[in-house]
Length: 85
Image (cartoon, rainbow, N blue to C red):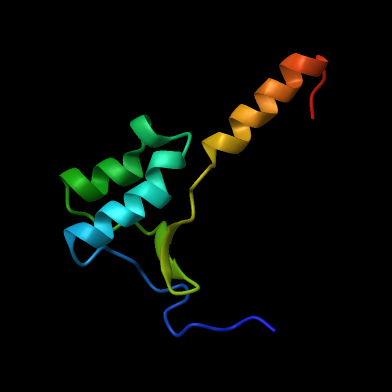
């Protein structure tokens, strides 16, 4: 049975620098959009709350997150086999 957290789906915005660094490390640093992300740039530069940043299972997540490590593994497998996975 999945535990339901009271904050699930509510907007997330880091309340301090440490929380922000942790969120960035877990989400932004591992996302394929990292350097061209209008969500991150809008939050940092414009201090605008992104609708994509929400709580899930007690943690801040970005709903637009796309894992770059899975993409790299897929590309490597494709180059080794010559096939799409």
